[in-house]
Amino acid sequence: MSHLVSCKGIVIREQIYAENDKFLIILTDTMGSVPVFCKGARSYKSKLMVCAQLFCYSDLVLYRKGENYWLKEASLIENFYGIREDMNAFALSQYLLEVVRELTRENLKDNQLQRLLLNTLYALEKKMKPLYQIKPVFELRACSLSGFMPDLVGCTVCGQYEDPGMYFAVQEGMLYCKEHAKQATVKLTPVTPAVLKAMRWAVFAPLARLFAFSAPDEELLVFDHLAEHYLGYHLDKRFETLAFYRTMLAE
Image 1 (cartoon, rainbow, N blue to C red):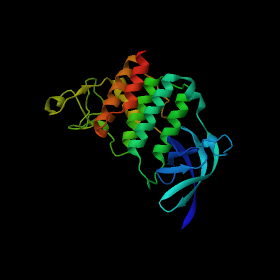
Image 2 (cartoon, rainbow, N blue to C red):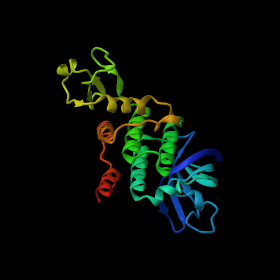
Image 3 (tube, rainbow, N blue to C red):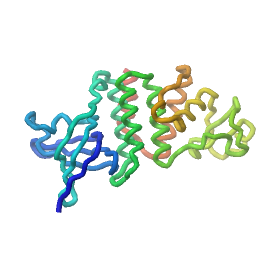
Image 4 (cartoon, one colour):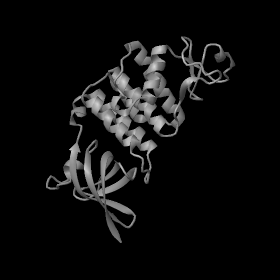
């Protein structure tokens, strides 16, 4: 028994399979993350070669046979080639893909994470904002879409929305005002109004305007560290690609 499935998908992992074939992980708009075999994808004669590469976003026709999907047809929409021309952006994009692979599963019909990834890769390619702004926005929004949304509305005790002395609990994902921070039983990180505004924007802003905000560089760097810590803690995972990205920045 076999059948065809049409979808839009972006390649988030590729590896060699047999002499001229590839094994891909494709984040689709209708089925979540799907393992796909691609016959002849390493051959220059293959019509599928151009779409069977990392970052390639395409209209796809998948052929299911038994438990496996095979790529039957593909029409490229975007390959984000410009990311490969900036080594730091390329290293960061590898981290984004690893995070997405960690968060997605097959048969997940919600395509919001796919849209987030596409918007973020576009921002990287077009150099819309500094890397240390793009990265934490992606991290907090990805967490929020995957069941780890922090509560940034106000102090978890009294509901106070604005306070120059607000604190954030990474473990709880909650805010405390200066007064009620004394009651917290977990480690707290002080957040300035600018950092808190950036965090709220990342979680609540419309996807089309996700990167359309500004903040001083020193505040963005704090935001970057905080979002990275939050994602790493709640996913309980060390990302090798993140370590590589940090190494690239240090060179």
